[in-house]
Amino acid sequence: MQVSVVIPFFKDYQYFPEALESVRRQSHQAAEIIVVNDGKDAESEKYLSQFDDIIVIHLLKNQGSAAARNAGISAAVGPWIAFLDADDVWMENKLAMQVKFLTDNPHFDGCHTGVCTFNHQGIQNTYLNKPGSLNVADMLIDTHILPSAFMIRRQALLDINLFDVNFRCKQDQELTLRLAVAGYQVGFINQCLIKLRRMDHGNTTSSGHKIIAGAWLMLRKHWNLYRQYPGSLSRFVYYSLMTAGGKMQGLQRKSCFILGKTMTWVFPALRSATNS
Image (cartoon, rainbow, N blue to C red; front, side, top):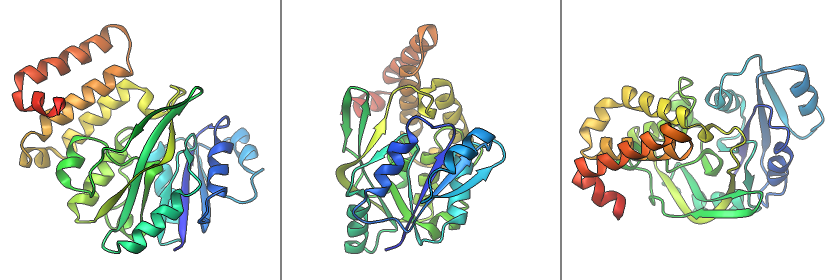
């Protein structure tokens, strides 16, 4: 199974070597490693030129990770795409486990894996409680599939017109929602096969304001879908507020948490869902 790896890069000088090395060490070797430089300048061009085993695509200006991933997908030759953020790390058997899963379960168009978060102190949390297969109701509520854990048929991405470049946050949730609506099947491997860096060093989810902005775009674009699935709207707004609040400070942080807590009293079903 030929897998093209797509890595968006934006001034990730500190962590990129570790991410790239985790791809090189895969027991199932990638067919190609495509690094999309999201905002070409002399420094980034010179830096990436030192790696002779990657294909580099230079975007002339910073357009965001959605546009960078789209450029990588469009250039890829492999029928399968695996994403990796430039500050994350794959376990050595990540691709092999996904290839085996998809070979054994040919009805799936892709799969994702469990996730461990880490910082300079080591592993912080492990997340394995995710849906066994992709469905619209789950994708409306939360971001269950993270790019670094995701492997998918390239054609499926092309069929739904790739990532929406208007999203600077929640673009992964929005993409997987459209995959579910289109009927594509994505399975889950209940093992931690990637390490997601969480050090508030500039990754998109470290900004609570971007989370709120991404949530607002989700609601505007998919409002009719939220109306079709009772309870999905309140849960989505609640989780977005609580996640954003966790990334903020002072009054903004408190305001998000108060609004979220208030929602659990206004919507009794939401209180039951968040306590389950």
